[in-house]
Amino acid sequence: MYMAFGPLGLTYNDLWVVTLADLNDMAEGWRYNRFLEARRDARLAMWIRFMVWAKKAPSLEDLTGIWEDGQVMSKEEQYRQIVQKIRDKRKGMP
Image 1: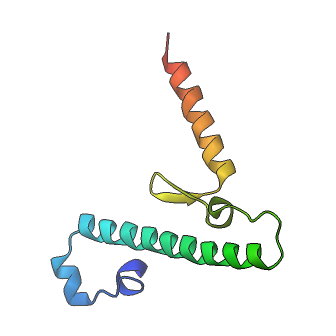
Image 2: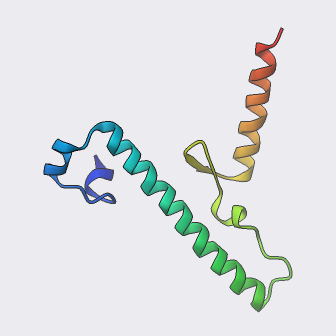
């Protein structure tokens, strides 16, 4: 409910019209938009840092994470998730 009244800016009357699936889609769209904004800000910070003093700037993924399966995760978390999927797939094979 926090998402409906806070970031999405819905009113009580909007909740009579919006279904839960619509609300979920709006919330995921808002989270993805925030992720893209963070990437844009990180890119700007990376360029500034690189131009000023850094020899090797961090990647965007290092600064903002990676969008995977509807959530933001670090490279390490993504790696662990991929390894776990492979292990689960191998267990299912005869």
